[in-house]
Image (cartoon, rainbow, N blue to C red):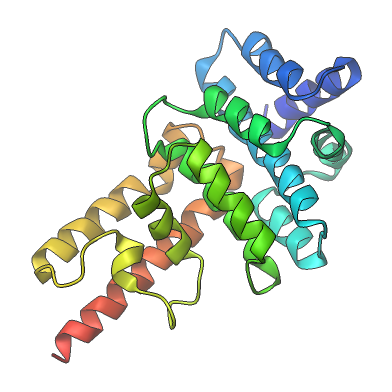
Length: 239
């Protein structure tokens, strides 16, 4: 049974009975999947992405067709489950609870409890992918994403590295993308690059709870890391 079958059943159940929003959804994930930690992580990631995407749309005030397509790139939802995903999205969007409460609850549900938690970074990357789909990250979206990062305990330097992955590298700093100080010896740059590639291999992401259906996040992240490394390598070659 795919993640979408399990997620669809869960959403149908929880949206039919939920009365108070995010608290009920989070508790339902914990209880329904209490016997399967791996499945619980994958469902938790999916619920967090859908709910926070809805909250970002509400904060921005506009949902463009580009953003809808970007959402669909990450969430390749089978036609039979589209209605259930839309129900959870609408539930989060209508919920009177603010996005900060959602982010806090999702961090408790998905996170490791440590700063710069990789699974929470996965969620933030997915939100960036959607936000930039229309060609730029608007001011309200930027404020929303920065506050989500703060709630997720992603430190400022790490946040800047994530942000740099999602801007045009022609105007960005490839060293920031790799999270390494400019001027470091190339051996250290290469070592850092190889660690990032290893940490962000799709198998690693799946192991920590990213459903295989959403591996688009991993491929776009690796593309940005590779591009940054190639820019640094080219620049040093011509020095």
